[in-house]
Image (cartoon, rainbow, N blue to C red; front, side):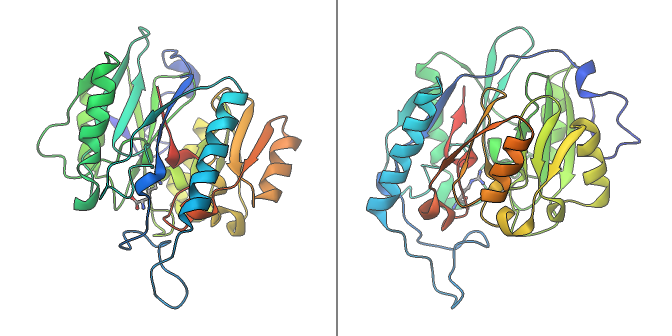
Length: 298
Ligand code: ARG
């Protein structure tokens, strides 16, 4: 199937596409090697231009809180061991994309990381998912950049990917993935604001109809497309978008794990019948990520 970047060109709606399962396990990355050593996104420097400094003990405590929050709502957790020199390996959303198929299998696509400092992480994921007996898939050579579930935001329960095109993933990745599955639809969105550099910083699906999104991150065409895919898309206030409100994760259509300093968004979620689970992620935000980036579902 082709990729679609505008509402006029997309012949389907989410409900027309084959059903897929919701994934109920997450792979988390031990933050033992977590640090900010180079600025590879717009969030990693202070106002004075110096690199953010991370409170490592606090980061570990926040990560343990996140892990416990998943377990409390019935999501299974596994942990990828840290490796020295791989300071971003706690952001497990990026080195792979797990893709549940209509037949019940899940394929694991290896990323092609944009920055040299993160390339070795895909190998760690390959080892983990191979040992867990998943089928591993690799993109063709011509794809330059593909950062897994950082830019591949899966539509809950449908064979549909929302794909970011920007600094971390190029259009060719979506073309290659679209040609690998005849029943899959891919909707692509150009990311136009460098603060929202991965699609998962700008769009958080909640269920088949609801999502949180950041209007500033998209073109008008992109906003129109995503509002057609999620008829109840809720626009976020910029102040909380910059605290990664749209990097929330709703694994079960009900509970929404979200950065705790996003109170307006939590109230909005409650108003629409969701259960916000606020968690502290201040130290990971200093590296440009929050809840959604810190897990790979499988
Ligand atoms: N410092 C990491 C990077 O720039 C943060 C990754 C956040 N991940 C995400 N899925 N948004 O690559």
